[in-house]
Amino acid sequence: MMKALIAIDIQNDFVSGSLGTKEAEIALSRMVEEINSPKYDIVFATQDTHDTNYLNTLEGKYLPVVHCIKDTEGWRFPKSIEEALHKRNAKIFEKDTFGSLKLAVELQKLAPEEIVLIGICTDICVVTNALLLRTHLPNTKITVVSQACAATTIDKQKEALDVMTSCQIEIEK
Image (cartoon, rainbow, N blue to C red; front, side, top):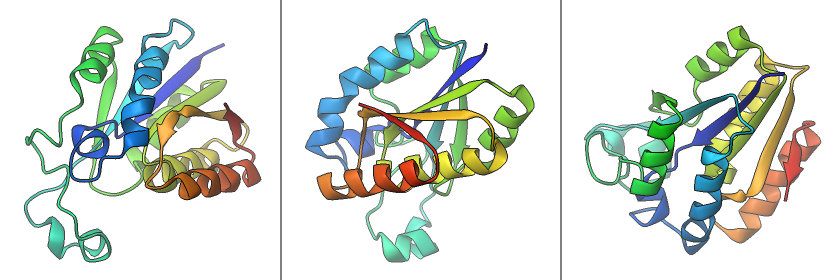
């Protein structure tokens, strides 16, 4: 049985940078634990990637906070995450929007029995990727580890987890 872990956008700007939260800083150690866990056969990660034109994009108009500009410190993974991903030979999917179609297609080809998601922001990129994966792999067990996720607010964390539960995505505490 193949079990895949997907680490969504665990980047400096979402942990301690321009869009960072205390909750993300707290969840970081659990995220590292999950990546390092031998229970996963394969590990993938997404990396939110924007250019200097970000504020002129639709996302930039709705969220006018410059973040994850390619090759900046905010775009990079925190050192502990980078080391864990490297150790697991994780494949990284750069993306310029909330979800990664390339990731969904890759997982569809691999057809794992279970997909587990962790990361930031639960209410934006984690939920988007979870729903993309649910669409591409309708009969695959998908789980989100809530303690290894962080949303933009505590209320939005609960709301995003509720939406995913409604879409038959399991929530692990």
